Length: 432
Image 1 (tube, rainbow, N blue to C red):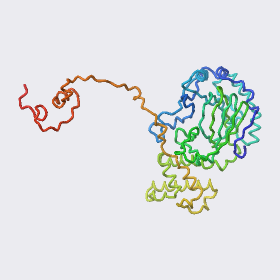
Image 2: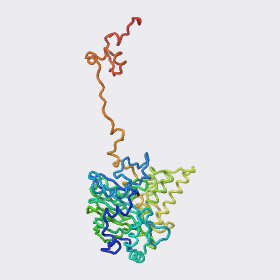
Image 3: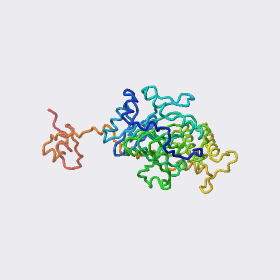
Image 4: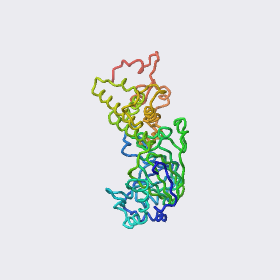
């Protein structure tokens, strides 16, 4: 764990006393009045992506018109009923039930939970064992505890988090695929920071499109199956691809603080990418992040900047600061860095990292909206207008041009040279 690699602990005492949990039991304990946010997906997908609603703004650069996973508000009892009865749609529960206040060693249950359930969380979770593990692995304090529940074959696509976690299986089982952080820009293609799917990979690992994501063919990870009582350590910035294997699956996710643990070097590129994308977007806008990062990577920023303007001065300062941060974090010595190179064969490591950040990323994601239809179109019905024209009018519309146009019909233009009264020749008779 200290090295920042995943570790599976079998049959630990952490949640062994909770292995009798069921959806019916939790329905009684978690209250019938409090509303929770539940993820909902079509049965044909049965994949749950927790969309960042605050980033999915209409008209934004990465706007997703209709996210694959919807969010519904319901009580836990309603969720349990839907999980058992729904066939065309599937649901997943993923919410925080405990939260630390200040420097608490043991987080407190949320206020609206039943008192018996609060006592159960306090007594039946082995906090002594967890505190011993925190001391051994130098973890920080537990920030929050989340309850997760889903049905058979429910899929949580590969996602990374910026903090470390402990996943404890309470009931059921699930299969995890863990992919190292250094694969982020070498085959995993994570969504940009400002995207509603931030934290997820753009690659569908169940059906990878190697034509669109060629580097994904070289990605390798670790696989494990969690059973009741098992605990797995999930390092920060590692991608976790999870599939639930039984009809009822319940797990607890402990979000850990950094404590006295050093950041593994493999996490640096992904962590830096999040910082650089945010910095550039603040100054140049989300749509220009890729442009400026590529300029910095290829050392071409001076060709695009007018130093005679205030805006140009701010840009050159931004590029220099970002370059120094990259060198300092990736090599540890910004002052003695060698001269930058535009030739790819002579590029420094930090330049290759920046270019890899942009490869296949930081572009619009139109494939997420390819099946979207405007809501108004879905209710439109065809209207049939009655044809009131006579057979002669339908056959020779040019002869009845003025009458048909007055009734709203479209009459094609005539290029004839034969004088036709009412068409190419106006009547000279005065109006009666």
